[in-house]
Image (cartoon, rainbow, N blue to C red; front, top):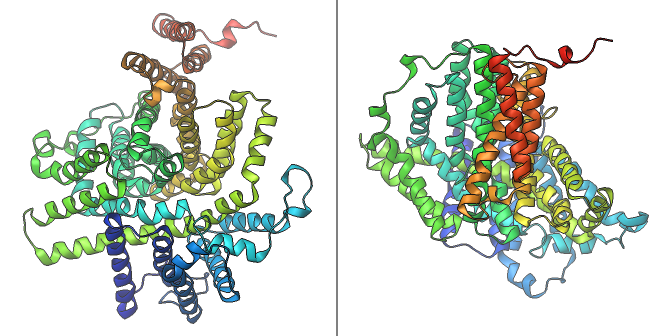
Length: 628
């Protein structure tokens, strides 16, 4: 990414600032989906060509002449639709050679901005679906279709609300920007410091205190971040060095932060971009998504926390030293907590009151800014510059996401145009022989694979478009199915071989990324179980009576802790093979709701505890089996 300076730097910082102001204005006064997406696309693509070079040999001091031409083409193509959209709403199938040319240029530019910001995988995938739309008539069997002309494809993508300017583009141009700006504002107005102090105070006294601080701070920061990788980059910048200074080996320090930060995208109230898209796809209020995701999110962090706790006990990792522990009387003060509690509290209130998410985020931003300006010491110029920088940072964050989503929107639109989603759904149902558990296994594997090669939002959107219909068609609740796909798309960022959160964490820690990934998966092993728990037990999504939900949560917690003990190899003391088998088996039994399976699982945990307490862990499988 170019770091522009001088006059060019000022110009593009000003453009980013204007874009942020437009996004905040849109939160209260949204435009029609076409001009909303087109204006946002014009800003995003212009900034992309300015800030992201074509390749390694491109100039880093500023945009090349080719970049300026591409900027002009992007602004022209997007601006044309922003101005003349009403005509095409009335005449959706009307096109002229110039409009087809503009649409074609925009399609190529969308591929290019995606390549510059997130790499080749997504443009190649989009190009594959584009070829499928052209050549479907030549394919045999279930995957074949009648084929579409270039004019028909461009009309579909460029001139209506089902293509470039579809649902996903609308969400990322209207709903998500205020939340991204809110996160940037909270980081510079005292919110990050407050979260860090609370995390140190709450988790520092537990065994493996520095690692537990990473879990708690990542969970708290995840409520305002909504991004695993930014969570690692932000909280990891202080938790990883702290862990290394306290004697943690560097692979463990990186793994702890990667595993902990991954849950940020499922931690309400500000979940990842995919949650907003999920709300729109399902027609469910965003607050309902948050409420359904709350218990699984807590279970995720509990699972990671259990893994870290047992690892800390196994390797005798210390608590946080007293000199690093903040004083409670300094943490729980009005001045410390107000910068985070007031804006987030207002956000939650407005969401619960059923205001739109973007409107709620807008007022939370204003609250955060007002508190920042009126807190001591009062320095109007310095604080104004701080807020301006936060807005520009928010625009840069949205830039990458929007360029990614434009390309993903092309894929999703072509899936709808060609009908391939329905065909893949039929294929999955056939492979699973209408067995829901097998279909869930297939969905889990595909979601993990998609998430390895794609950003989480892209992985969820494609997974929902291609896989969601299959499991829903076999009787699974729609919300549970989408959360299942979303969850595994998120966990994929710590699942090797392609694991973005691990790459960032290992870079900060200076560790071997492959070893770091292996430890992260082991620490987060209980979390891999959570989606199967909530799809088999809807109570964990908040469905059912309070007593049933409470009982389900208790058994799920016990099962997750049991799996952590089995995977790490420690409970009250190091485990033998038999105890590990009992703990893991108990966890599997506790997945399935029911009195019999719960009692069997609890009995296995009790037997493992008795072995540890009274037989000192000496009973293992090799001792019980006869020697050959």
